Image (cartoon, rainbow over all chains, first blue to last red):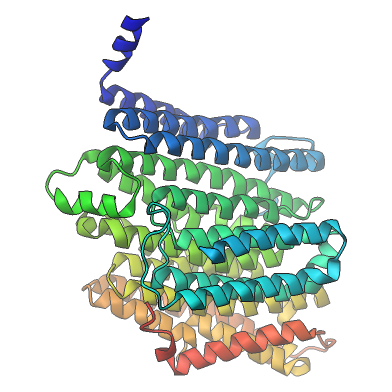
Length: 109
Length: 459
């Protein structure tokens, strides 16, 4: 157990930055190319969670707890946002019977 | 701080009033609460500002001036909503409460002194607005606007947060003073993370203010949302988002201007052209105003391109002038739409004959939006242009003047329709609250156009 913790502490900061950037990029790509609203929301969550991981890594690296506190703020507000978002999706689904973003094209011009 | 606490308690109180079916008390209680908030800000004005709560918020003159502007604009919007939302939804208390919650977020955004507060403020402001945009549950356009706004808002929050995380990684703090200290003390050894963070923050904030190339959600959301929610988004939210944008850049990033200024310059020019050219071809007044709000975001970006001590007051003036005119324009659109059922330019035909005073108010609003002298809009544009000229951005000013000319074309289409297309039509009924709002907004627009010194020099 002790050696696992030491191994984790030995991971350099750059790896975390790279890893989080890749997850973030996957999230952005998901939002841009997927058409299902639920999947888009999952991609947004992926973006937010990559930020959480990055903040935690920086926080530990700097020995400053503020970053980890910020993670709690992000979690709480992301939960609030998802609650509202799911309600909006249910409302749209009741009217259109679809969660496909292509069904939403009435506003044009 | 007491003002922010008052606002959030007021919103909860309004929710309870809705629960106890005290429908007629909603508007008076909300307005009373807003007036109380204003008094609290007025008391705070002269006091020396220090960061409160471990550097979380700072109520300097900048913060207080923008907060007062946001509260005043919200009061005008609430006055317009008396007979608008009673028809739209039986749950009218939620509407008032959500507007007040959103205002609380806006006030936090203009007075943050820590990136955590910027994030929380933007989220409080936006989450309430996602619901407001979709408050007409059966209306398809409203649904679509809410979903688009939600997806784009959450997406842009991701960029904002990644930017904040990178700034934190480089500077080791979320506090604006500490970040500034980091920038000033190592001018030649700033981490590349910090530069990437600035770029991501620009992306996130440009989404929020609706600047090109991140503007594509704006017309659809402004068009689909109920008109009064659109007014709130185009005035209070836009003003607060710009104030937050400016505050962050003015506090922290001025020494790095050579890095981010060209990016913002290109964005400004694209925003101006996209907003104005697309506004010209619109047939619906609501969509025209949505695109014109994009072009006004371009003019407001001037203050950040030519960042300096005067930027605060030019954004305050421009945002105030633009918001007052927008409230008149959209308020008139509500009345005309109620009378004719249409949002097109033709719906304004011959309005001047039957409603001369209403038409006069619309003319003042359109002149101010177009930036004609003797209105507040002209002084706002003048302050923006002279700030940029002092920075030797000649090309930007030339392009902006071309765009101002394009703006005159589509704003004057409304005036032409009202005065030179006579048709027989019934008189549009204007209730007393609408009259009061139009009178107040038009008077302030004219007064500020003639005596701008009242507002300049505040910050």
